[in-house]
Image (cartoon, helix red, strand yellow):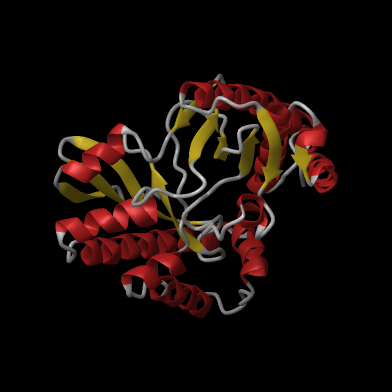
Amino acid sequence: MKTFSAFLIERKAPKFKNTDAADVNEIMMGYFLAGDWRKFEGAKDAKSQHANKSEKIGEEETKAQTDRAKVMAKEVIAWSKKNGYNGKVKKIWWTARPGVLSKAVGVAVDSRKNPTDVLIQFSDGEFLGVSAKSTKTSGDIGFKNPGIGTVSKNLKIDLSGHNTDAVEALLKQYPDLSRSAKTRKKEIRADSKIAKRAEELGAKVLNSIRDDLLKSLKTKKDEDLKEYLLSDWLDAKDAVYPRYVKVTGMKTGASIEDPMSNTKIAALSSEDVVLSKVGNDSIGVMAGKKRIMKMRAKFESQKLASSVKFSGDPWK
């Protein structure tokens, strides 16, 4: 039974998906960039989504995301003025819906290579995309989160089998567990012994996936490895249209990165690449003496009851 204090904490901090908070942040950043809902293409839908997501995440989180969005918008405008965007903001799109980005710019855009969340059109006709992240922490954070299927397909290796085998091992040990991942997640978390075993097996899954990925990458020639990292993990192999920047709203302030022009890309393009094991589930990527990132395998939530994906994380 929950204590009264635990009940109050739960009521004060409602559970919600990270995507709900991210959507509120993106919509409000778009609004602050526009300064007027009349400049926000699809404003009616955006407002409806904002109301729905805000209710899910609660008043406190909505305010936090809105405050960050305001700072993020200010930083984007400042950056645009310093980098050749001289027109005023004419129109804004929230590109969460499939096809919105391509329709807005008038050409087909591969969203896998262009992670624009909010698109700006300036009065001179120029476009600038903004990929947004909002975090309670400070400093550099990861942006790329490829699924295990995408990585497996592009490298022509099977990384999913480790998780499948581990789930089967857990079900064999605890035959009453559900084969439904959603139900199994609740069952695992409700039993400390099962949760401990899932944690052990899950850690081995991530370790095996990491080792297989590292083995595959080390078979590549240096130039092919660089091309893969720039294209699949950093979205920076070729110039993309529309041009976009990555803005991160943090606990205090915001930071902006141009993925086509930064010291990591420069180092990766000119220096030898060195890969190494980091911890249980990550691959460290270095170019010369500069740390580029960690390629980390992780479960979306509960080990052995949620999907496995990757993230390109800062390597400090």
